[in-house]
Length: 188
Image 1 (cartoon, helix red, strand yellow):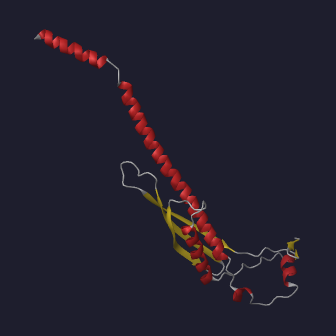
Image 2 (tube, one colour):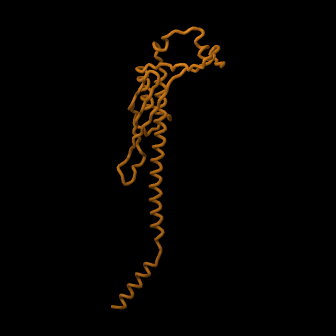
Image 3 (cartoon, one colour):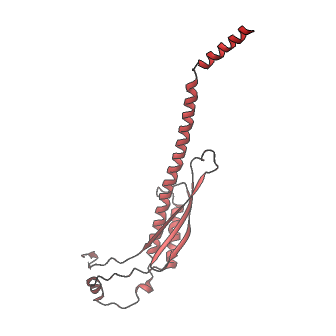
């Protein structure tokens, strides 16, 4: 019996000292870690690119909305031939161009809809529509905030996360560029 036990112990110690196949476990472990890291990096880069696309859409919508002129506010008041030269000589700031907030809101919505339906390279394809969450217009400036959901290419391991919500905001005003213009060319 003792010889059998000694034989088993020797076989066990030889099996423990045998290192064949141990590198396979290390390679599989490194492969799993590398694959998980690539998945996470892909998801992070998807979020970064989608965030930039949402910011571009928000900025484009704000610019489109601010270019709606409130004609009644813009053309009220009196001016003559000396108004512009006096403003330049006294270094007086020209007032901002008034915005028609109702039309501006419509233009903002149209631009965001255009970005949501666009299939070209301007829009990141993983965005699920762009929603307007805040619209502020005081007649001189326009501020908007948007929100969109981005679908991640890979589900984050060990979680149920397969999408992320992104937000963006933009604000702008429309000002007159003062100077002396001759036939549409600015001389000063």
